[in-house]
Length: 375
Image (cartoon, rainbow, N blue to C red; front, top):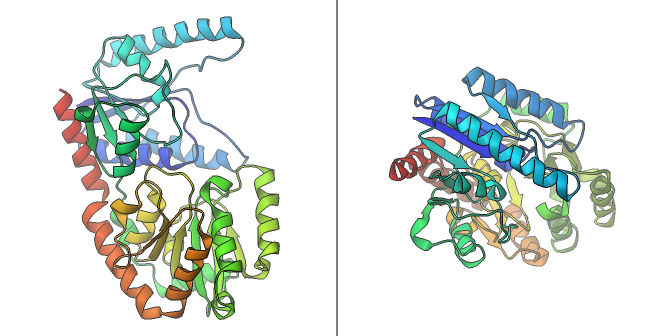
């Protein structure tokens, strides 16, 4: 099967991870994938290596990256750019002759619709609103029950067109790191060995809710709990303003000496260090990092954004708290940090759930079923 992905910009985010993993899975099942994109959304200098590695992987997989120019400038320039964009994508589609067009950017869905092509689209964000560029696809992939509801309620998507396909991740996250490697990693980053490690993975921004986590630990947990914990964040600041914001939060909560920041990298070995993982995000369509933590056997606590109820059965394989409610989060942290047996049981159950429901193989299989339905 020949498949074309259309995506406006590829950033250092969950969308890029999903596209990379889905592409990898499709190619390894014998399908040909091409990616039409306007390029890579660079935010900081550290983004360069991420995008270099991503392009290298696509090249190894034999996946061509075909670039188009995003319309910019004054109104006339945007109109001319839009005409060129449509013409260029039409040309590439005529050359590739894909069996499936999969649009990953909602504001580009008007192009296959205008060209009279059947296509699939995926809901990757809960911040989009109806506009002239968004057109309903023939089949729409929602990645969680929350995003399914969102597309119907906000985007007015026909219910009969929606298919639920959870994000999936490679089973490598379930493979244990050796004790020696874990010790070496802790030593490398000066992470104390006798503390309970409380982890977070993602961009350090208000949208990801890192302030909720810090306020929970600093203001809503028992002093005994606070003293037992060391925080490890794996990720980058999006702006210099975010760096100042986090430093202020750490100081306000007296956590400066209990915090380690690991610049963005493959998070897999770090999940193995975490005793507890928290996703306090204010906005998500799925929360991929929560599933990565679960498959790694972490005791996982997350906010009740999209994906939470798909992933976690409260009290059985993790905990869910209302977004913004750092007081409740603090109480949950008291429970799991003071009760090793509880967090180990939740982590074990979380791993079982992730292996059953959220593997890359399952995502690829379910996505191909949607493609077959469109043919």
